[in-house]
Length: 265
Ligand SMILES: NC(=O)c1ccc[n+]([C@@H]2O[C@H](COP(=O)([O-])OP(=O)(O)OC[C@H]3O[C@@H](n4cnc5c(N)ncnc54)[C@H](OP(=O)(O)O)[C@@H]3O)[C@@H](O)[C@H]2O)c1
Image 1 (cartoon, rainbow, N blue to C red):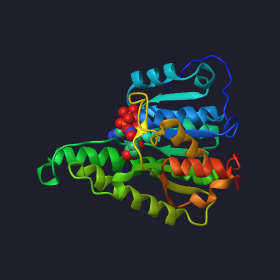
Image 2: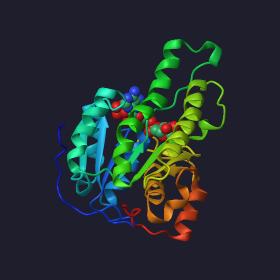
Image 3: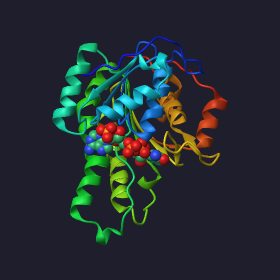
């Protein structure tokens, strides 16, 4: 692990302090959506563990964070989508004695030809990035979340239910990711852990695409909804495919919510 060194400071905002003393892992946290989730969780007071295959991406992420947040970012250069990389990260996290929240924001978009023209290499790569990585991360870290009575959140998109022509492997993997979550829910029933999927139904405003329509969520707002589903009030979201768009966010903000994390068992 190469730690990211940072200065001290404070973060303002309504979620400040909600995750004080908690440990979160954001797999894919150096990605476009992941970065906003990381920023929101840090703003809520969590220590946030972020793995990436690229040290440069981790450094760039740290550099974009406000100094007060950077102090609680724990960056690890490793491949969390491989059994070896995931096991190594688990070994590094375990001494903390807790893992309260995992957000899996893994995989990415791909646009090519119709399925009948997709090469086997492309198919395998996309299934690997968008599905197998989720399996490896869940297999490795869900047991820690169960032990902590925490939350496990998979990030997904509308391609999980809309067959997107020209992006077939992404749609197939996204749909299978929903079943992966359903099985994880079934297999953790009776434990204090919560598992759910956030289905982002809009494009997301991110570092490389900061402008967008008014209906687009920002990556930080996705993070706000992660906080909600993992909070005491978000219990209704347990096991669900939670559709994320501006209406969901406004509903959550309008109804107010108990910002405390779900109680540990
Ligand atoms: N961007 C949007 O507008 C949008 C909209 C709706 C839904 N979503 C959903 O949000 C999620 C993330 O999308 P994104 O746009 O943030 O993608 P992204 O910028 O490409 O980031 C994806 C992250 O996944 C990790 N990853 C991919 N393949 C991996 C592998 N084989 N092993 C280990 N890590 C791997 C990457 O880690 P490294 O740092 O190691 O490369 C990267 O940090 C996806 O589920 C997507 O469907 C995004």
